[in-house]
Every structure is written in structure tokens, then in C-alpha cells.
Image (tube, rainbow, N blue to C red):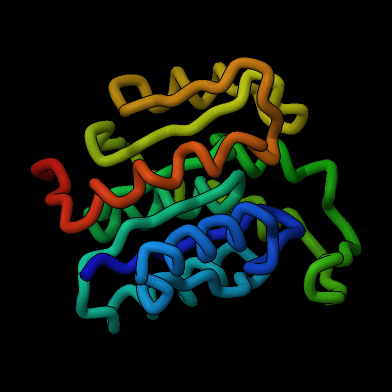
Length: 193
């Protein structure tokens, strides 16, 4: 049985609509036990350590699903642990995208107050994979993403399976249309490394 690990984006959480849609879809397929969506630390190195620790304990095959910043994390983990990943409007250069958020922050999902620093931007740079195995990724993009330029991701993951929704936004309203595509990823063997 495959386990689906959902990684939320910046200032989000496991209660986000995409996470709930994914959880509900898998539950409807009788796989509610095969879904996890942990609340990630707002600090990159801590979040990656949290996820890597979980991945070293799981026994079944894992498919990563990452949204925005979670897509960046999923890319790091996919390369490190040789896992397939579905990336929803993924961040490519989060150390640049998040630089404008340096300073005090408040996560509306958790109520947590925290501070982002230059050190955290360096942590993001440190986990960028040197190379990508494009065959292991399914990229899902919206051309009207108001947060990230979808073309940057399309170019970055050249050679990966790509689904591009014309006019869809960062939230990706049409994500539920993609959910049946998760099931064929069950037991998928990653490309050779």
C-alpha cells in the first residue's frame, strides 16, 4: 500500500483546502489510513529534519505531494530518498520569494508567531538539489498563479510530466480533477539514479 505525504506551503497547514481535498479523495477510495499531512515547522532546516525523520521510519512506498514551498521541500526529499513527487505550483527559488517576509510572522492556520531571518533563507539554498530526475515528477501548474510564475517551474522541471491549467491560480482550483491521477502512482518505481 502506498502512503501519500502532503507537504503544505508557506503560512499554511494540513487544514488547507488542497490537503483536505486530497485526504477526502483518498478516504473515498478506502485509503484514509494512507495519507499524512504534518504541520511543518516554519523553519526550513527543522521542517526537512522533521520530514526526513518520518521518511526513515515508514515501511510502505511513499508518494510526496507538495504545494508551493511544500513543492520545494518535496523536490529535496524526492531526490534524497528517490521518491516520486507531485508538485502543485512549486516554489523554485523560495529564498528569493520569501525574502520580503523577513521578520515577524504569524501563521493563520496554527496561530504560531515566529521570525524569519536571513539564516532561514540560507537553509533554503542549502537544500536545493544539484540535479533533478525529471521522470519522478508530476508538475501541476496554473497559468494565473498570482504568487509564482508558472513558466519558471515549467522550465525548471523540463522533461517531467506536466499538467498546466490555463487561467488557474496559486490555490489551484482544479486540483480535484488531478486527484484520480494519484492512484496510478501507487507502487511506482522511481527512475534510476
